[in-house]
Image (cartoon, rainbow, N blue to C red):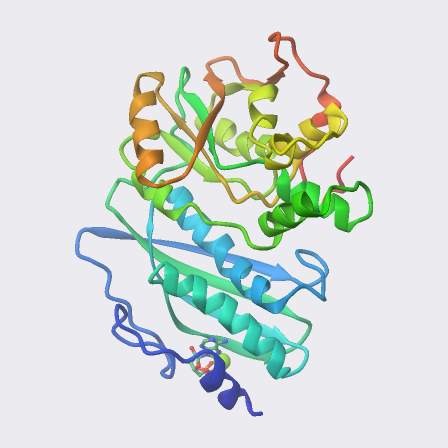
Length: 324
Ligand code: ADP
Ligand code: MG
């Protein structure tokens, strides 16, 4: 199959929102007047971000989900995306599964595939996504204020627990593992919540590398500190709520340092709690308060008694530094 046949068979779709899709030198988008364009890229590399034998359908889903999650964190509505794909071979069964997983999620968000690039090489998937947000309304990492509540959406840590099982480090009951594995391989981008939080949240980001590591970006860019309630954070873990038992340290590590959650972390003034909960309800996405932004710099993790937790739990996943 030639490169062009492959693109035509698996990646060409009619476009409705874009002015021009796949097939020309450039795609043409039609941003709504008065809106700013929100743009983000994410690359997934085989062996680094996923196992080579992962189901291509879930891989297609995840490749787009992590990009939609970036738009969600900015409060932007998805418009379109491009797909740059390096493939070791034109495996039709793989392409079929991958494109179905990818395009099903794209359709669910009315986000159109408008172009890309295809080349032979070690499996590598790079998506650039375009969204729109009213001018000046994007949620930023730099706008947290002392006194803000710190909130997270959904559940933390389950993706990390699934990874620990796949690596042979822990075991979980089959049904709990199945749910956790879905969180790892098939994350749900919180797009509706992101747009609902515009005008309510001060700052936001999406959790890809672990709560503490990602929160540090907000603290640095907003020149503030934070107290995190470890019990509130581990209380969100679905595996824990379903009655599993693991050492406390494992729960804490999964919720605070585990990556791949693709939940939103956001801060909002304490007097907007009711508005946050109403926004979460409109988005049909649960949210939990897990801490507070402080004027005092630094990041403190507190146990149920308000006592600081040992810092060895804090290592966050970093692609260039092996976790401790
Ligand atoms: P160019 O020669 O300008 O780089 P290509 O020949 O690589 O263009 O691609 C032809 C058309 O197919 C372009 O419109 C490009 O955006 C699109 N395209 C290439 N690869 C993909 C892909 N993986 N998914 C979607 N569109 C693609
Ligand atoms: Mg090209």
